[in-house]
Image (tube, rainbow, N blue to C red; front, top):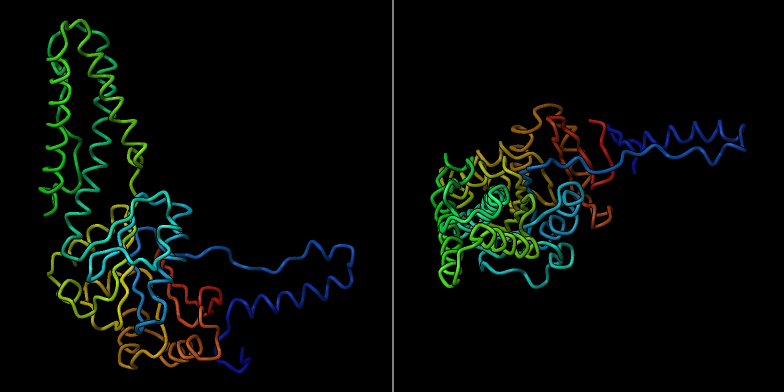
Length: 346
């Protein structure tokens, strides 16, 4: 790296520190093995992030999201559901999602299918909570002999934060359908029995079977969802401020969901999405006006220095898999990196 650049990276600082340590180590050869380079571990990408990956076709935006960023979050907050949003609505066969997330349920969707799909995922989570509570109540009732095992059991589902939002009717409908099918299953089983010696025990066994089956299907555990939206720059779903998909993204990111939006131009997105984004990956060959708009909205200081950092991070001589500028804002603290390793002291 050019030592005449007007900024330094953490790696350069590490090298200076390492040189000092090595100099001391020559005087203490027996302790040389104790001296390690000073490096910052991990990637400060935000939980519940709205991450924008901005670059031209073929520059590796989707690959970076699905093969590096999602797996990093998955270490601390394991995913149960991954959604890939594209114009076709199908899963990309060239994607490594199935290999990287073999324990997850994978979905393909268009932006206009996203709301109902995420509502069904949330309904599954509420159903799991409900089944656990219902199971516990039947266990407490023991082997009572009343013919109707639901006597004295409250069938109201837990309070749901999405009651305030437009997708709640979809969630409520899915929950009601499941509840009714469960009641019908237990009632039908009891109606076919010759005696009603232990109806609550029968209901308890059927509930247990439901819970076991759902957990074998990957349900019954805390939901965490990752969503990759691929190249929808000019679609109303992302350009219109009041579009339902924009509203869905802005509210859902507060509920155990990460969104990775791959676009070709920063300014093609509406302002609400831009200003609510936490993390940014900017690839080469972006228009100067786009970079200037990004600087104005997200950085706001040292304009010339920021442009120099961007051009250094995206120059041709850098390795292709790290030829981008990354800005992370975990906890409100900005960190700028060239690629994912070189931390710029900005």
